[in-house]
Image 1 (cartoon, rainbow, N blue to C red):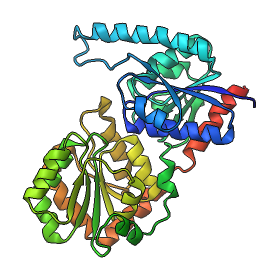
Image 2 (cartoon, one colour):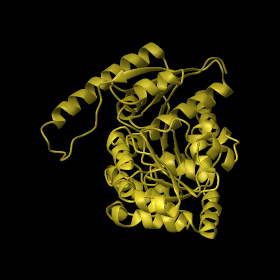
Image 3 (cartoon, helix red, strand yellow):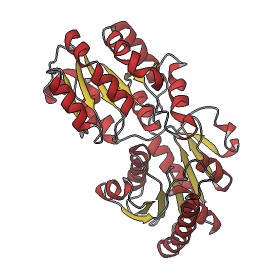
Length: 368
């Protein structure tokens, strides 16, 4: 195949950007001459992360609808949507893609709408167990729909669904450190039970509040905590740890080497975004999931239930986390048998090689 041309659109969070970049990398491995252009939303994370990964990106002035939906401010949102769609049509005419891929996020809707209207085959990657409004609306225009969970024919035409799983950052799977080597690399005590806390790159208020309130209990129990607070909460969490005289609870705004942090941890406390779930499955990590309540259609709770219903994770509702999370974490990290059982069950749910499978489907659409 000579020099295929592909648009990949979406973003807004790392949960959309990391899979998108993984798909692009897999396409380039299979077809080094491929031309790939990303289309994202102006001012969102993808506008810096995608160029850092080595790809070009165009930004659209698109943004999400404001609740309640009858808010007068949504007039401006819709104006920006149609403006974005016009801009995408110009991008498509200039770039001449043979296929468009949507990974979710604000930019996906105008991009795939425009591509479909211009006769370009489209592929959707739906990461969650409960499909979002954007992907449900785009489904009738998509040639292929790549999903990570069973039962997605509730949302999409069954004959176009392919169960591929969600791509994750390749660096996570490439790390071959032992647990002790990872702890040593992070300056941790190799002999102490260790918890990794990740609330997403921006942080999670409920999780941070729970961990901050439990600092002394972790210290007294001799449990190390690698605590990614997110940039918004970093200063406050670092202050609380300092006031408590914490030696074992180590807050930091952002963990750059997640592969080593995962390796070092006995258990993980996490939100239940699709990418986080996929990482936990592929790495076989025991976890406590605290779904964010601030997401569309409460999809994180559904993601978490998909694991906890199979005894592959512990589920703690957000509205109970400040009361129960620390005790759940201390009990779990102290129970080797429970950790081993969760690791065994979560590995059963892993879908490896997702990026490669999706890349093959993208290239098939060009051949056809």
